[in-house]
Amino acid sequence: MRNSFQQPLRIALWTGLLIIGSVLVNLLSSSNSNADSDADHLRRFNSNYQVFSLTIPNELSFCGEAVPLERLDVRERLDRELLVNTYWQSNTLLAHKRAARWFPLIEAILLREGVPDDMKYLALIESGFTNTVSPSGAAGYWQFLKETGASYGLEVNNEVDERYHVEKSTEAACRYLQAAQAKFGSWTLAAAAYNMGPGGVGKQIERQHRNDYYDLLLPEETSRYLFRILAMKEIIRDPERYGFHIRDKDLYAPYRTRAVDVNGSIPDLALFAIEQGSDHKTLRLLNPWLRENGLTNKSGRTYRLLLPAEGFNSFEP
Image (cartoon, rainbow, N blue to C red; front, side, top):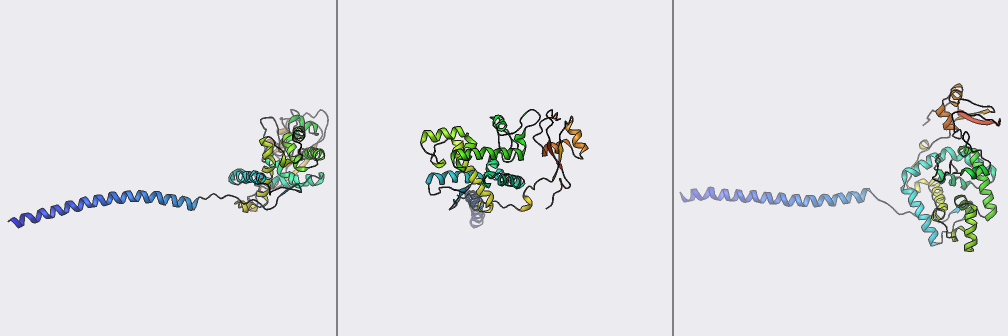
Protein backbone atom coordinates (compact mmCIF):
# COMPACT_ATOMS: atom_id res chain seq x y z
CA MET A 1 0.00 0.00 0.00
CA ARG A 2 2.86 2.40 0.87
CA ASN A 3 4.58 1.90 -2.48
CA SER A 4 1.36 2.33 -4.41
CA PHE A 5 0.81 5.72 -2.69
CA GLN A 6 4.33 7.08 -3.28
CA GLN A 7 4.37 6.22 -6.99
CA PRO A 8 1.60 8.67 -8.03
CA LEU A 9 3.19 11.30 -5.77
CA ARG A 10 6.52 11.00 -7.51
CA ILE A 11 4.82 11.21 -10.91
CA ALA A 12 2.94 14.38 -9.89
CA LEU A 13 6.16 15.91 -8.54
CA TRP A 14 8.10 15.20 -11.74
CA THR A 15 5.22 16.48 -13.84
CA GLY A 16 5.19 19.76 -11.90
CA LEU A 17 8.94 20.13 -12.25
CA LEU A 18 8.69 19.54 -16.00
CA ILE A 19 5.98 22.18 -16.31
CA ILE A 20 7.99 24.73 -14.33
CA GLY A 21 11.07 23.95 -16.40
CA SER A 22 9.15 24.34 -19.62
CA VAL A 23 7.88 27.75 -18.52
CA LEU A 24 11.39 28.86 -17.57
CA VAL A 25 12.79 27.68 -20.90
CA ASN A 26 10.08 29.54 -22.78
CA LEU A 27 10.75 32.71 -20.81
CA LEU A 28 14.48 32.48 -21.45
CA SER A 29 13.88 31.63 -25.08
CA SER A 30 11.57 34.62 -25.46
CA SER A 31 14.16 36.89 -23.88
CA ASN A 32 16.89 35.57 -26.15
CA SER A 33 14.57 35.80 -29.13
CA ASN A 34 13.95 39.49 -28.46
CA ALA A 35 17.67 40.12 -28.13
CA ASP A 36 18.34 38.23 -31.33
CA SER A 37 15.55 40.13 -33.07
CA ASP A 38 17.16 43.48 -32.24
CA ALA A 39 20.55 42.21 -33.33
CA ASP A 40 19.10 40.81 -36.55
CA HIS A 41 17.30 44.07 -37.17
CA LEU A 42 20.52 46.01 -36.75
CA ARG A 43 22.39 43.61 -39.03
CA ARG A 44 19.70 43.96 -41.70
CA PHE A 45 19.79 47.74 -41.39
CA ASN A 46 23.57 47.85 -41.77
CA SER A 47 23.57 45.49 -44.73
CA ASN A 48 20.70 47.13 -46.62
CA TYR A 49 21.06 50.82 -45.82
CA GLN A 50 24.47 52.30 -46.41
CA VAL A 51 25.59 55.89 -46.83
CA PHE A 52 28.99 56.48 -48.38
CA SER A 53 31.28 59.45 -48.35
CA LEU A 54 32.22 60.67 -51.82
CA THR A 55 35.52 60.78 -53.67
CA ILE A 56 36.54 64.23 -54.86
CA PRO A 57 37.58 64.45 -58.54
CA ASN A 58 41.31 64.74 -59.16
CA GLU A 59 40.85 67.67 -61.53
CA LEU A 60 38.06 70.14 -62.05
CA SER A 61 37.59 73.35 -64.01
CA PHE A 62 34.94 75.99 -64.48
CA CYS A 63 34.78 77.81 -67.84
CA GLY A 64 38.32 76.67 -68.54
CA GLU A 65 39.63 78.03 -65.21
CA ALA A 66 41.21 75.42 -62.95
CA VAL A 67 39.65 74.76 -59.55
CA PRO A 68 42.46 74.60 -56.91
CA LEU A 69 41.53 71.22 -55.46
CA GLU A 70 44.89 71.00 -53.71
CA ARG A 71 43.50 73.49 -51.17
CA LEU A 72 41.84 72.00 -48.10
CA ASP A 73 39.02 74.54 -47.87
CA VAL A 74 38.22 74.20 -51.57
CA ARG A 75 37.95 70.42 -51.29
CA GLU A 76 35.69 70.64 -48.25
CA ARG A 77 33.42 73.27 -49.82
CA LEU A 78 33.08 71.12 -52.93
CA ASP A 79 32.52 68.01 -50.81
CA ARG A 80 29.63 69.71 -49.02
CA GLU A 81 27.78 70.54 -52.24
CA LEU A 82 28.45 67.13 -53.76
CA LEU A 83 26.99 65.50 -50.65
CA VAL A 84 23.96 67.80 -50.60
CA ASN A 85 23.13 67.19 -54.26
CA THR A 86 23.94 63.48 -54.21
CA TYR A 87 21.74 62.72 -51.22
CA TRP A 88 18.94 65.12 -52.13
CA GLN A 89 18.06 62.58 -54.77
CA SER A 90 14.63 63.81 -55.85
CA ASN A 91 15.83 67.36 -56.49
CA THR A 92 18.90 66.23 -58.43
CA LEU A 93 16.94 63.71 -60.48
CA LEU A 94 14.45 66.38 -61.49
CA ALA A 95 17.28 68.78 -62.31
CA HIS A 96 18.87 66.16 -64.56
CA LYS A 97 15.58 65.41 -66.31
CA ARG A 98 14.76 69.08 -66.90
CA ALA A 99 18.30 69.87 -68.04
CA ALA A 100 17.83 67.43 -70.92
CA ARG A 101 14.92 69.59 -72.13
CA TRP A 102 16.52 73.02 -71.80
CA PHE A 103 20.26 72.54 -72.19
CA PRO A 104 20.18 72.18 -75.99
CA LEU A 105 18.53 75.59 -76.42
CA ILE A 106 20.75 77.28 -73.83
CA GLU A 107 23.94 75.66 -75.14
CA ALA A 108 23.27 77.00 -78.64
CA ILE A 109 22.79 80.55 -77.32
CA LEU A 110 25.89 80.42 -75.11
CA LEU A 111 27.94 79.23 -78.07
CA ARG A 112 26.54 81.93 -80.33
CA GLU A 113 27.18 84.66 -77.76
CA GLY A 114 30.69 83.50 -76.89
CA VAL A 115 29.95 82.51 -73.29
CA PRO A 116 31.45 79.27 -71.90
CA ASP A 117 29.18 76.24 -71.92
CA ASP A 118 29.59 75.74 -68.17
CA MET A 119 27.34 78.74 -67.54
CA LYS A 120 24.33 76.56 -68.36
CA TYR A 121 24.74 75.04 -64.90
CA LEU A 122 24.35 78.51 -63.41
CA ALA A 123 20.79 78.68 -64.76
CA LEU A 124 20.14 75.18 -63.45
CA ILE A 125 21.13 75.96 -59.86
CA GLU A 126 19.40 79.34 -59.98
CA SER A 127 15.96 77.97 -60.75
CA GLY A 128 16.02 74.21 -61.29
CA PHE A 129 14.43 75.15 -64.64
CA THR A 130 11.19 76.14 -62.96
CA ASN A 131 9.62 79.58 -63.27
CA THR A 132 10.04 80.29 -59.62
CA VAL A 133 10.04 83.73 -57.99
CA SER A 134 12.54 84.38 -55.22
CA PRO A 135 11.68 86.30 -52.01
CA SER A 136 13.51 89.31 -53.53
CA GLY A 137 11.37 89.15 -56.69
CA ALA A 138 13.90 87.52 -59.04
CA ALA A 139 12.06 85.52 -61.70
CA GLY A 140 12.53 83.07 -64.54
CA TYR A 141 15.16 80.46 -65.24
CA TRP A 142 17.97 83.01 -64.88
CA GLN A 143 16.38 84.71 -61.86
CA PHE A 144 16.55 88.31 -63.01
CA LEU A 145 15.30 91.10 -60.80
CA LYS A 146 12.85 93.39 -62.59
CA GLU A 147 15.25 96.33 -62.80
CA THR A 148 18.23 94.20 -63.79
CA GLY A 149 16.27 92.41 -66.50
CA ALA A 150 15.08 95.69 -67.96
CA SER A 151 18.62 97.11 -67.92
CA TYR A 152 19.76 94.15 -70.04
CA GLY A 153 17.06 94.58 -72.65
CA LEU A 154 14.16 92.51 -71.32
CA GLU A 155 10.60 93.82 -71.53
CA VAL A 156 9.01 93.65 -68.11
CA ASN A 157 5.47 94.91 -67.56
CA ASN A 158 2.03 93.64 -66.54
CA GLU A 159 1.37 91.88 -69.86
CA VAL A 160 4.84 90.78 -70.97
CA ASP A 161 7.67 89.65 -68.72
CA GLU A 162 10.61 88.42 -70.76
CA ARG A 163 12.41 87.20 -67.67
CA TYR A 164 10.26 84.12 -68.31
CA HIS A 165 11.28 83.96 -71.98
CA VAL A 166 13.97 81.29 -72.04
CA GLU A 167 15.71 82.44 -75.19
CA LYS A 168 15.64 86.18 -74.47
CA SER A 169 16.55 85.81 -70.79
CA THR A 170 19.50 83.58 -71.76
CA GLU A 171 20.70 86.25 -74.16
CA ALA A 172 20.38 88.84 -71.39
CA ALA A 173 22.31 86.60 -68.99
CA CYS A 174 25.07 86.32 -71.58
CA ARG A 175 25.35 90.12 -71.74
CA TYR A 176 25.47 90.30 -67.94
CA LEU A 177 28.14 87.63 -67.64
CA GLN A 178 30.27 89.08 -70.42
CA ALA A 179 30.23 92.49 -68.75
CA ALA A 180 31.21 90.95 -65.41
CA GLN A 181 33.99 88.90 -67.00
CA ALA A 182 35.35 92.02 -68.71
CA LYS A 183 35.30 93.86 -65.37
CA PHE A 184 36.97 91.17 -63.27
CA GLY A 185 38.97 89.21 -65.86
CA SER A 186 37.57 85.88 -64.63
CA TRP A 187 34.51 83.79 -65.46
CA THR A 188 34.59 82.46 -61.90
CA LEU A 189 34.23 85.98 -60.50
CA ALA A 190 31.62 86.70 -63.18
CA ALA A 191 29.55 83.82 -61.79
CA ALA A 192 30.02 85.17 -58.25
CA ALA A 193 28.91 88.60 -59.50
CA TYR A 194 25.78 87.02 -60.97
CA ASN A 195 24.84 86.02 -57.43
CA MET A 196 26.16 88.99 -55.46
CA GLY A 197 26.18 91.76 -58.02
CA PRO A 198 29.28 93.29 -59.63
CA GLY A 199 29.29 96.09 -57.06
CA GLY A 200 29.34 93.67 -54.15
CA VAL A 201 32.15 91.59 -55.60
CA GLY A 202 34.15 94.68 -56.52
CA LYS A 203 33.81 96.05 -53.00
CA GLN A 204 35.13 92.80 -51.49
CA ILE A 205 38.06 92.69 -53.91
CA GLU A 206 38.98 96.25 -52.95
CA ARG A 207 38.53 95.62 -49.24
CA GLN A 208 40.45 92.32 -49.11
CA HIS A 209 43.14 93.16 -51.68
CA ARG A 210 42.57 89.84 -53.46
CA ASN A 211 41.01 89.22 -56.87
CA ASP A 212 40.60 85.42 -56.75
CA TYR A 213 37.21 83.94 -55.86
CA TYR A 214 38.83 81.20 -53.81
CA ASP A 215 40.74 83.74 -51.69
CA LEU A 216 37.81 86.02 -50.91
CA LEU A 217 35.71 85.94 -47.76
CA LEU A 218 32.20 86.28 -49.16
CA PRO A 219 28.66 85.94 -47.78
CA GLU A 220 27.72 82.29 -47.38
CA GLU A 221 25.37 82.18 -50.37
CA THR A 222 28.04 83.53 -52.71
CA SER A 223 30.73 81.46 -51.04
CA ARG A 224 28.72 78.31 -51.82
CA TYR A 225 27.47 79.51 -55.20
CA LEU A 226 30.26 78.34 -57.48
CA PHE A 227 30.56 75.02 -55.63
CA ARG A 228 26.86 74.37 -56.15
CA ILE A 229 27.44 74.91 -59.87
CA LEU A 230 30.48 72.61 -59.85
CA ALA A 231 28.64 69.89 -57.94
CA MET A 232 25.70 69.89 -60.34
CA LYS A 233 28.07 69.88 -63.30
CA GLU A 234 29.92 66.85 -61.92
CA ILE A 235 26.79 64.86 -61.12
CA ILE A 236 25.08 65.52 -64.45
CA ARG A 237 28.23 64.78 -66.44
CA ASP A 238 28.87 61.49 -64.61
CA PRO A 239 25.67 60.49 -62.80
CA GLU A 240 26.54 56.84 -62.15
CA ARG A 241 29.64 57.87 -60.22
CA TYR A 242 27.25 59.46 -57.73
CA GLY A 243 24.71 56.66 -57.71
CA PHE A 244 22.20 57.98 -60.27
CA HIS A 245 21.08 55.49 -62.91
CA ILE A 246 19.09 57.39 -65.52
CA ARG A 247 17.98 55.99 -68.85
CA ASP A 248 17.60 58.16 -71.92
CA LYS A 249 13.85 57.57 -71.91
CA ASP A 250 13.67 58.90 -68.33
CA LEU A 251 14.84 62.35 -69.44
CA TYR A 252 12.45 65.13 -70.43
CA ALA A 253 12.65 65.73 -74.17
CA PRO A 254 12.49 69.26 -75.63
CA TYR A 255 8.99 70.37 -76.54
CA ARG A 256 7.88 69.95 -80.15
CA THR A 257 6.74 73.41 -81.17
CA ARG A 258 5.95 75.66 -84.09
CA ALA A 259 6.21 79.46 -84.09
CA VAL A 260 3.65 82.10 -84.99
CA ASP A 261 4.62 85.78 -85.32
CA VAL A 262 2.12 88.31 -84.00
CA ASN A 263 2.45 92.07 -84.50
CA GLY A 264 -1.01 93.13 -83.41
CA SER A 265 -3.14 92.76 -80.31
CA ILE A 266 -4.73 89.56 -79.03
CA PRO A 267 -7.78 90.47 -76.94
CA ASP A 268 -8.33 86.90 -75.69
CA LEU A 269 -5.38 84.52 -75.55
CA ALA A 270 -7.64 81.55 -74.76
CA LEU A 271 -9.65 82.07 -77.96
CA PHE A 272 -6.44 82.68 -79.90
CA ALA A 273 -5.07 79.36 -78.65
CA ILE A 274 -8.24 77.52 -79.68
CA GLU A 275 -8.11 79.10 -83.12
CA GLN A 276 -4.57 77.81 -83.42
CA GLY A 277 -5.70 74.27 -82.54
CA SER A 278 -4.43 74.41 -78.97
CA ASP A 279 -5.65 75.63 -75.57
CA HIS A 280 -4.87 78.37 -73.09
CA LYS A 281 -2.98 76.08 -70.71
CA THR A 282 -0.58 74.88 -73.41
CA LEU A 283 -0.12 78.39 -74.81
CA ARG A 284 0.93 79.66 -71.38
CA LEU A 285 3.12 76.62 -70.76
CA LEU A 286 5.09 77.33 -73.94
CA ASN A 287 5.00 81.12 -73.52
CA PRO A 288 5.20 81.82 -69.78
CA TRP A 289 6.30 85.39 -70.54
CA LEU A 290 2.66 86.16 -71.38
CA ARG A 291 1.37 87.34 -68.01
CA GLU A 292 -2.25 88.30 -68.72
CA ASN A 293 -5.21 86.82 -70.60
CA GLY A 294 -4.71 89.20 -73.48
CA LEU A 295 -1.94 91.09 -75.31
CA THR A 296 -2.70 94.74 -76.18
CA ASN A 297 0.68 95.35 -77.88
CA LYS A 298 0.20 99.11 -78.18
CA SER A 299 3.74 99.53 -79.56
CA GLY A 300 3.08 97.17 -82.47
CA ARG A 301 6.03 94.93 -81.64
CA THR A 302 6.41 91.57 -83.31
CA TYR A 303 6.17 88.74 -80.80
CA ARG A 304 6.97 85.14 -81.64
CA LEU A 305 4.61 82.76 -79.88
CA LEU A 306 5.26 79.06 -79.58
CA LEU A 307 2.46 76.59 -80.24
CA PRO A 308 2.42 72.80 -80.03
CA ALA A 309 3.59 70.98 -83.13
CA GLU A 310 2.55 67.51 -84.22
CA GLY A 311 3.40 64.96 -81.58
CA PHE A 312 3.66 67.56 -78.79
CA ASN A 313 1.93 65.34 -76.24
CA SER A 314 3.26 62.01 -77.55
CA PHE A 315 5.63 59.98 -75.39
CA GLU A 316 8.13 57.85 -77.29
CA PRO A 317 9.86 55.26 -75.07
